[in-house]
Image (cartoon, rainbow, N blue to C red):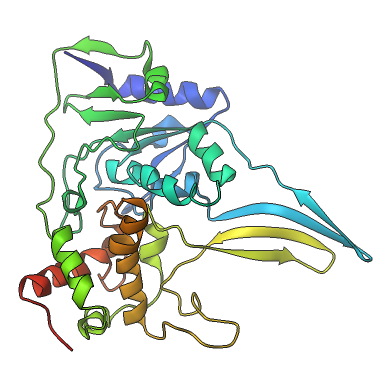
Length: 339
């Protein structure tokens, strides 16, 4: 037996949520060929089918692109620092892909490492995430290669599985999920069938073997020669979390703010002296792959990637993580290409 909800009742649930003055976000069709996770004004805007996945990720609703940390005022020789309280309200994210929700248990580590980021933690606590299991994938999806799948439950408070008849099986996974759907579902003998997902494209063992012996391999430059350094990969990735802290304002007043940044920008590692330890896109791409599949797992026990494929899907030259890792897999199996 399972719990199910009709699409109409699901959308009414969204209207009830927003009607209480709470924030909601989900897949919205921005253009005929563009779907993005965006704030929901009306449940009628929510897109639950007819596309593969949104082009962005849901991380911006918990880790925003721009965030004020504190303000400052300068009067004569006196400097006053003003606390900025995080703008936190209860929010619902509905229709998220499992590979997006899976990012948050991964990111929890870095935002609670040597310093607990209460801005992140408060938003995380106030957010209920309802995922929609994937029915299809494209050539850029590789969730199964990083230990996930079309119905991976990590990071979800509740999961919807399309039954194909205008109803969804509802699987409540946390107390927040149970509270959201309490009294809104009905019991049924229908259960959803989850597709196997994309085939595995590489193994962690092969990637580790290449990392161990081929850090200076010229293949890094060859594999990533076409990278433009635009950071579309990082900005649409569910797990990329690089940020910069800058002062915004003037000599009299302003704010210190946290803004998204990306390791693919040439200025990302530039020193005040003018020295830059990563002078080429090949070096920067190598760092990105190393961070996701070697440095982060070594430190936190989690691969910093959910296999969503956004990095390649949104890349103007079709690079991203998947093509690089497939090449590494081939080189690793073949014994590497020595310098």
